[in-house]
Length: 314
Image 1 (cartoon, rainbow, N blue to C red):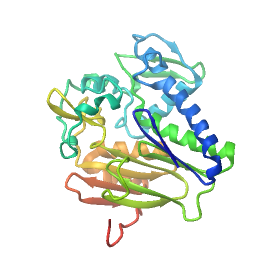
Image 2 (cartoon, rainbow, N blue to C red; image 1 turned 45 degrees about the vertical axis):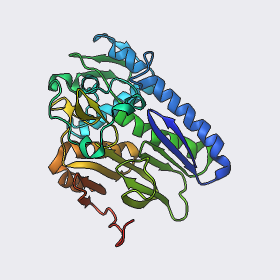
Image 3 (cartoon, one colour; image 1 turned 60 degrees about the horizontal axis):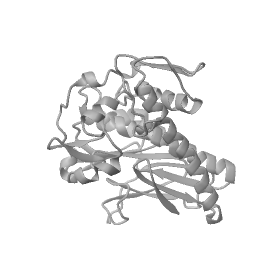
Image 4 (cartoon, rainbow, N blue to C red; image 1 turned 120 degrees about the vertical axis):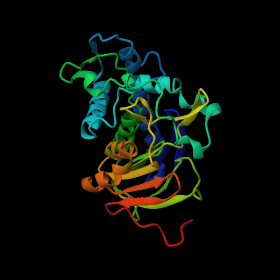
Protein backbone atom coordinates (compact mmCIF):
# COMPACT_ATOMS: atom_id res chain seq x y z
CA UNK A 1 0.00 0.00 0.00
CA UNK A 2 1.10 3.56 -0.69
CA UNK A 3 -0.48 6.86 0.33
CA UNK A 4 0.20 10.27 -1.19
CA UNK A 5 -1.39 13.73 -1.40
CA UNK A 6 -3.52 14.64 -4.39
CA UNK A 7 -6.37 17.07 -5.14
CA UNK A 8 -6.07 18.57 -1.65
CA UNK A 9 -6.77 15.18 -0.07
CA UNK A 10 -5.12 11.79 0.46
CA UNK A 11 -4.83 9.00 -2.09
CA UNK A 12 -4.44 5.34 -1.17
CA UNK A 13 -3.27 2.74 -3.69
CA UNK A 14 -3.26 -1.02 -3.17
CA UNK A 15 -2.52 -3.82 -5.63
CA UNK A 16 -2.80 -7.59 -5.35
CA UNK A 17 0.87 -7.99 -6.33
CA UNK A 18 3.12 -5.80 -4.18
CA UNK A 19 5.89 -6.12 -6.78
CA UNK A 20 3.73 -4.02 -9.10
CA UNK A 21 3.15 -1.18 -6.65
CA UNK A 22 5.78 1.14 -8.15
CA UNK A 23 4.53 0.89 -11.75
CA UNK A 24 0.95 1.17 -10.49
CA UNK A 25 1.85 4.39 -8.71
CA UNK A 26 3.43 5.72 -11.89
CA UNK A 27 0.24 5.02 -13.85
CA UNK A 28 -1.87 6.71 -11.19
CA UNK A 29 0.42 9.74 -11.04
CA UNK A 30 0.18 10.26 -14.79
CA UNK A 31 -3.60 9.94 -14.86
CA UNK A 32 -4.11 12.25 -11.88
CA UNK A 33 -1.77 14.89 -13.25
CA UNK A 34 -3.74 14.93 -16.50
CA UNK A 35 -7.03 15.35 -14.61
CA UNK A 36 -5.60 18.19 -12.50
CA UNK A 37 -4.39 19.97 -15.63
CA UNK A 38 -7.86 19.63 -17.09
CA UNK A 39 -10.11 20.60 -14.22
CA UNK A 40 -8.31 22.01 -11.18
CA UNK A 41 -10.12 25.09 -9.90
CA UNK A 42 -6.88 26.28 -8.29
CA UNK A 43 -4.49 26.10 -11.26
CA UNK A 44 -4.79 29.31 -13.28
CA UNK A 45 -3.70 27.54 -16.46
CA UNK A 46 -6.05 24.56 -16.12
CA UNK A 47 -8.66 24.09 -18.82
CA UNK A 48 -11.38 24.66 -16.23
CA UNK A 49 -9.90 27.98 -15.11
CA UNK A 50 -9.58 29.11 -18.71
CA UNK A 51 -13.18 28.08 -19.45
CA UNK A 52 -14.49 29.80 -16.31
CA UNK A 53 -12.79 32.99 -17.48
CA UNK A 54 -14.13 32.76 -21.02
CA UNK A 55 -17.10 35.10 -20.39
CA UNK A 56 -19.48 32.90 -22.34
CA UNK A 57 -17.27 32.49 -25.39
CA UNK A 58 -17.23 29.19 -27.24
CA UNK A 59 -14.11 27.32 -26.12
CA UNK A 60 -12.53 24.18 -27.57
CA UNK A 61 -11.34 21.71 -24.94
CA UNK A 62 -9.35 18.50 -24.78
CA UNK A 63 -10.97 15.08 -25.11
CA UNK A 64 -10.26 14.42 -21.43
CA UNK A 65 -11.87 17.65 -20.26
CA UNK A 66 -14.86 17.08 -22.53
CA UNK A 67 -15.32 13.65 -20.98
CA UNK A 68 -15.10 15.06 -17.46
CA UNK A 69 -17.67 17.75 -18.28
CA UNK A 70 -19.95 15.15 -19.86
CA UNK A 71 -19.71 13.00 -16.72
CA UNK A 72 -20.60 15.99 -14.54
CA UNK A 73 -23.61 16.77 -16.74
CA UNK A 74 -24.70 13.14 -16.56
CA UNK A 75 -24.55 13.31 -12.75
CA UNK A 76 -26.71 16.44 -12.85
CA UNK A 77 -29.24 14.86 -15.18
CA UNK A 78 -29.71 11.60 -13.27
CA UNK A 79 -30.06 13.46 -9.95
CA UNK A 80 -32.46 16.04 -11.41
CA UNK A 81 -29.95 18.80 -10.74
CA UNK A 82 -29.07 17.89 -7.14
CA UNK A 83 -25.42 17.34 -8.13
CA UNK A 84 -24.78 20.43 -10.23
CA UNK A 85 -21.38 21.35 -11.73
CA UNK A 86 -22.23 25.09 -11.91
CA UNK A 87 -21.55 25.58 -8.19
CA UNK A 88 -18.12 27.16 -8.75
CA UNK A 89 -19.17 30.71 -7.83
CA UNK A 90 -21.15 29.46 -4.82
CA UNK A 91 -18.10 27.65 -3.45
CA UNK A 92 -16.00 30.79 -3.81
CA UNK A 93 -18.71 32.82 -2.03
CA UNK A 94 -18.65 30.26 0.80
CA UNK A 95 -14.90 30.76 1.18
CA UNK A 96 -13.65 27.72 -0.74
CA UNK A 97 -11.47 29.88 -2.97
CA UNK A 98 -8.17 28.00 -2.63
CA UNK A 99 -6.87 24.47 -2.28
CA UNK A 100 -8.45 22.84 0.74
CA UNK A 101 -5.08 22.23 2.36
CA UNK A 102 -4.73 26.01 2.67
CA UNK A 103 -8.07 26.22 4.49
CA UNK A 104 -6.87 23.99 7.34
CA UNK A 105 -6.37 26.92 9.69
CA UNK A 106 -10.06 27.80 9.42
CA UNK A 107 -11.47 24.31 9.92
CA UNK A 108 -14.38 24.03 12.33
CA UNK A 109 -15.20 21.24 14.80
CA UNK A 110 -16.99 18.30 13.23
CA UNK A 111 -20.01 18.86 15.48
CA UNK A 112 -20.56 22.26 13.84
CA UNK A 113 -19.47 21.46 10.30
CA UNK A 114 -22.74 20.08 8.98
CA UNK A 115 -24.80 22.96 10.29
CA UNK A 116 -23.88 25.59 7.74
CA UNK A 117 -26.16 28.60 7.26
CA UNK A 118 -28.98 28.22 4.78
CA UNK A 119 -27.93 31.24 2.72
CA UNK A 120 -24.72 32.77 1.49
CA UNK A 121 -25.51 34.95 -1.49
CA UNK A 122 -28.48 33.23 -3.12
CA UNK A 123 -29.28 30.60 -5.70
CA UNK A 124 -28.34 33.01 -8.52
CA UNK A 125 -24.77 31.84 -7.91
CA UNK A 126 -25.80 28.44 -9.32
CA UNK A 127 -27.35 29.15 -12.73
CA UNK A 128 -27.85 25.43 -13.35
CA UNK A 129 -26.28 22.63 -15.34
CA UNK A 130 -28.37 23.29 -18.44
CA UNK A 131 -26.30 26.46 -18.91
CA UNK A 132 -23.32 24.28 -19.84
CA UNK A 133 -23.38 23.80 -23.60
CA UNK A 134 -21.14 20.90 -24.61
CA UNK A 135 -20.73 19.56 -28.13
CA UNK A 136 -18.92 16.26 -27.74
CA UNK A 137 -18.26 15.90 -31.47
CA UNK A 138 -16.41 19.20 -31.84
CA UNK A 139 -15.35 19.42 -28.17
CA UNK A 140 -16.64 22.97 -27.90
CA UNK A 141 -18.08 24.29 -24.63
CA UNK A 142 -19.90 27.48 -23.75
CA UNK A 143 -20.97 28.61 -20.27
CA UNK A 144 -24.15 30.69 -20.30
CA UNK A 145 -25.62 33.09 -17.72
CA UNK A 146 -22.40 33.49 -15.78
CA UNK A 147 -21.99 29.79 -14.98
CA UNK A 148 -18.70 28.81 -13.37
CA UNK A 149 -17.79 25.15 -13.13
CA UNK A 150 -16.50 23.06 -10.27
CA UNK A 151 -16.05 19.40 -11.21
CA UNK A 152 -14.46 18.35 -7.93
CA UNK A 153 -17.05 15.79 -6.93
CA UNK A 154 -17.50 13.84 -10.15
CA UNK A 155 -13.91 14.31 -11.40
CA UNK A 156 -12.35 12.84 -8.25
CA UNK A 157 -14.56 9.76 -8.39
CA UNK A 158 -14.07 9.43 -12.16
CA UNK A 159 -10.32 9.59 -11.59
CA UNK A 160 -10.48 6.75 -9.07
CA UNK A 161 -12.33 4.60 -11.62
CA UNK A 162 -9.88 5.59 -14.36
CA UNK A 163 -6.77 4.86 -12.29
CA UNK A 164 -8.01 1.47 -11.08
CA UNK A 165 -9.03 0.43 -14.61
CA UNK A 166 -5.72 1.53 -16.15
CA UNK A 167 -3.66 -0.26 -13.51
CA UNK A 168 -5.64 -3.48 -13.86
CA UNK A 169 -5.55 -3.38 -17.67
CA UNK A 170 -1.89 -2.47 -18.02
CA UNK A 171 -0.42 -4.57 -15.21
CA UNK A 172 -2.86 -7.48 -15.04
CA UNK A 173 -3.35 -7.23 -11.29
CA UNK A 174 -6.15 -6.26 -8.95
CA UNK A 175 -6.15 -2.63 -7.84
CA UNK A 176 -7.89 -0.44 -5.29
CA UNK A 177 -7.65 3.32 -5.65
CA UNK A 178 -9.04 5.66 -3.00
CA UNK A 179 -9.07 9.40 -3.60
CA UNK A 180 -10.28 11.13 -0.46
CA UNK A 181 -12.67 8.29 0.30
CA UNK A 182 -13.88 7.79 -3.28
CA UNK A 183 -12.90 4.17 -3.88
CA UNK A 184 -12.72 2.17 -7.10
CA UNK A 185 -11.54 -1.40 -7.57
CA UNK A 186 -10.69 -3.22 -10.78
CA UNK A 187 -9.14 -6.51 -11.84
CA UNK A 188 -9.09 -9.62 -9.68
CA UNK A 189 -9.81 -8.89 -6.03
CA UNK A 190 -8.02 -10.59 -3.11
CA UNK A 191 -9.60 -13.95 -2.17
CA UNK A 192 -11.53 -12.38 0.69
CA UNK A 193 -12.21 -9.11 -1.14
CA UNK A 194 -11.08 -5.58 -0.39
CA UNK A 195 -11.79 -4.50 3.19
CA UNK A 196 -12.86 -0.87 3.43
CA UNK A 197 -13.49 1.14 6.59
CA UNK A 198 -16.40 3.58 6.20
CA UNK A 199 -16.13 6.55 8.57
CA UNK A 200 -16.92 10.25 8.62
CA UNK A 201 -13.30 11.00 7.71
CA UNK A 202 -11.49 8.87 5.13
CA UNK A 203 -8.18 9.75 6.82
CA UNK A 204 -9.27 8.48 10.25
CA UNK A 205 -7.59 5.47 11.79
CA UNK A 206 -8.97 1.94 11.87
CA UNK A 207 -10.28 2.53 15.40
CA UNK A 208 -12.47 5.50 14.38
CA UNK A 209 -16.24 5.01 14.67
CA UNK A 210 -17.51 3.38 11.53
CA UNK A 211 -17.97 0.05 9.82
CA UNK A 212 -15.71 -2.22 7.78
CA UNK A 213 -17.29 -3.63 4.64
CA UNK A 214 -15.97 -5.85 1.84
CA UNK A 215 -16.15 -5.07 -1.87
CA UNK A 216 -15.06 -7.19 -4.83
CA UNK A 217 -15.86 -4.90 -7.77
CA UNK A 218 -17.20 -1.47 -8.66
CA UNK A 219 -17.01 1.54 -6.40
CA UNK A 220 -17.75 2.82 -2.93
CA UNK A 221 -17.99 6.53 -2.16
CA UNK A 222 -18.54 8.51 1.01
CA UNK A 223 -19.79 12.09 1.05
CA UNK A 224 -19.63 14.05 4.27
CA UNK A 225 -20.31 17.55 5.56
CA UNK A 226 -17.83 17.13 8.42
CA UNK A 227 -14.46 16.78 6.67
CA UNK A 228 -14.16 19.50 4.00
CA UNK A 229 -15.44 22.12 6.42
CA UNK A 230 -14.11 25.55 7.32
CA UNK A 231 -15.12 28.89 8.78
CA UNK A 232 -15.89 31.93 6.65
CA UNK A 233 -17.13 35.25 8.03
CA UNK A 234 -17.49 33.63 11.42
CA UNK A 235 -19.86 30.97 10.07
CA UNK A 236 -19.30 27.22 9.60
CA UNK A 237 -19.19 26.13 5.95
CA UNK A 238 -18.76 22.89 4.04
CA UNK A 239 -18.30 21.91 0.40
CA UNK A 240 -21.64 20.32 -0.52
CA UNK A 241 -23.70 23.06 -2.13
CA UNK A 242 -27.48 22.94 -2.42
CA UNK A 243 -28.13 24.26 -5.95
CA UNK A 244 -31.50 25.61 -4.83
CA UNK A 245 -29.97 28.01 -2.31
CA UNK A 246 -26.40 28.46 -3.51
CA UNK A 247 -25.27 27.66 0.05
CA UNK A 248 -23.77 24.68 1.84
CA UNK A 249 -26.67 22.28 2.27
CA UNK A 250 -28.39 21.81 5.62
CA UNK A 251 -29.08 18.08 5.81
CA UNK A 252 -30.02 15.55 8.50
CA UNK A 253 -27.12 13.41 7.27
CA UNK A 254 -23.53 14.20 8.18
CA UNK A 255 -22.16 11.27 6.14
CA UNK A 256 -23.52 9.01 3.41
CA UNK A 257 -21.67 6.00 1.95
CA UNK A 258 -22.95 4.26 -1.20
CA UNK A 259 -21.81 1.22 -3.17
CA UNK A 260 -22.47 1.16 -6.92
CA UNK A 261 -21.29 -0.20 -10.26
CA UNK A 262 -18.63 2.52 -10.48
CA UNK A 263 -17.11 4.99 -8.08
CA UNK A 264 -18.53 7.93 -10.00
CA UNK A 265 -22.04 6.46 -9.73
CA UNK A 266 -21.51 5.87 -6.01
CA UNK A 267 -20.28 9.42 -5.48
CA UNK A 268 -23.15 10.90 -7.45
CA UNK A 269 -25.63 9.02 -5.28
CA UNK A 270 -23.91 9.77 -1.96
CA UNK A 271 -23.69 13.50 -2.72
CA UNK A 272 -27.28 13.66 -3.94
CA UNK A 273 -28.44 11.77 -0.83
CA UNK A 274 -27.06 14.47 1.47
CA UNK A 275 -28.79 17.14 -0.63
CA UNK A 276 -32.06 15.17 -0.80
CA UNK A 277 -32.13 15.10 3.01
CA UNK A 278 -35.14 13.23 4.47
CA UNK A 279 -36.15 11.75 1.11
CA UNK A 280 -32.72 10.20 0.50
CA UNK A 281 -33.33 6.71 2.02
CA UNK A 282 -36.43 6.11 -0.09
CA UNK A 283 -34.66 7.37 -3.22
CA UNK A 284 -31.68 5.08 -2.64
CA UNK A 285 -34.03 2.12 -2.03
CA UNK A 286 -35.82 2.81 -5.32
CA UNK A 287 -32.46 2.73 -7.11
CA UNK A 288 -31.45 -0.48 -5.30
CA UNK A 289 -28.23 1.10 -4.04
CA UNK A 290 -26.70 -0.20 -0.79
CA UNK A 291 -26.05 2.81 1.44
CA UNK A 292 -25.18 3.80 5.00
CA UNK A 293 -26.54 7.16 6.17
CA UNK A 294 -25.27 8.67 9.42
CA UNK A 295 -27.31 11.41 11.10
CA UNK A 296 -25.76 14.24 13.11
CA UNK A 297 -26.70 12.49 16.36
CA UNK A 298 -24.92 9.31 15.25
CA UNK A 299 -28.02 7.32 14.36
CA UNK A 300 -27.49 5.11 11.32
CA UNK A 301 -29.89 4.06 8.57
CA UNK A 302 -29.03 1.56 5.82
CA UNK A 303 -30.64 0.69 2.50
CA UNK A 304 -30.80 -2.09 -0.09
CA UNK A 305 -28.68 -4.78 1.51
CA UNK A 306 -25.92 -2.71 3.08
CA UNK A 307 -24.44 -5.19 5.59
CA UNK A 308 -25.51 -5.03 9.21
CA UNK A 309 -22.81 -3.76 11.59
CA UNK A 310 -21.16 -6.35 13.88
CA UNK A 311 -22.89 -7.08 17.18
CA UNK A 312 -19.95 -5.50 19.04
CA UNK A 313 -18.68 -2.66 16.81
CA UNK A 314 -15.24 -1.22 17.45
